[in-house]
Length: 179
Image 1 (cartoon, rainbow, N blue to C red):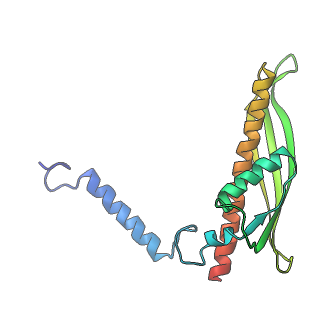
Image 2: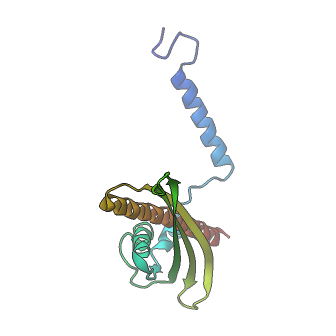
Image 3: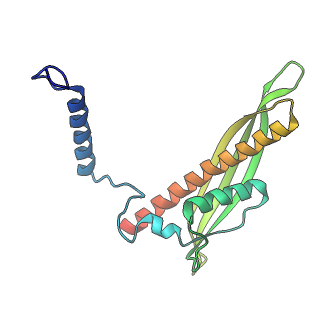
């Protein structure tokens, strides 16, 4: 008997290893490439460092801008930007769980972002998009706790929108580089 099972029968480790190798072989055969992987100097991530993020109004806009900076320009603002990312936000809140006394215990926060990436040399729009996020939070007796929960919902929504914008920008720069 071997460590993997009876002699002559493949063990679980061998089967999983064989399946993993087969999946990797299929992915490499179809031209699969990771979007943010090291593909040379023209990789989409390199273009992110040339994006200037414009001011975004209100506290929700500040949270989104921080999330975008962390994802697009983590080393700081570009010294010579090539692109400008402009974002507009619309926020709405609705109560979800309404009790008999007309009070609610849960709320939904929806944030819609419309954005445009512009070439700074020509001011021409290169890419437009819309992203949205819906988060929920509890409404409790403590007003401080409710405000904290609502602020956390805004922060989470900003992160989701920033991730979506980063993905779309990465796809745009990748297509531009390979197309």
